[in-house]
Length: 140
Image 1 (tube, rainbow, N blue to C red):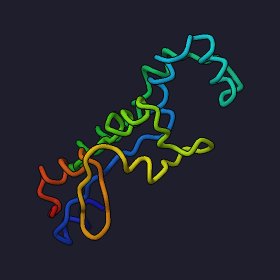
Image 2 (tube, rainbow, N blue to C red):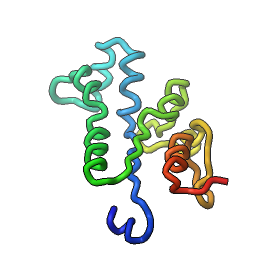
Image 3 (cartoon, rainbow, N blue to C red):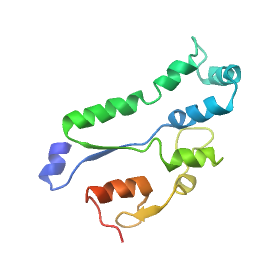
Image 4 (spheres, rainbow, N blue to C red):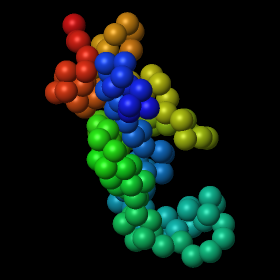
């Protein structure tokens, strides 16, 4: 993809969008007593030991793996995990659907300042700043 993009005069950028548990875990750790959190996690993880410290320490393992892969491959990487999305959750806005891991478009879009990228595509400030910094887009 990188080579095909370059051949077409474009640049491939990999954007990592966090899954629900990556964003919720630090908030849950902060908000809940340890035993209650373990009990709540048991619902989704019914087998084996639940090690909240290990889960917290490895919460961004996929992010690091993708960042390394992209760096080694000469591909720009944008990690949106610790962005306005997490801030909206801390404010009490549920940006993910309650019963699955997909973000709620209208609520997730409420994150921070928006920029228009091409016709009718919206992105929050970190993405816009990233694209501006590398001259990959034109913003009105």
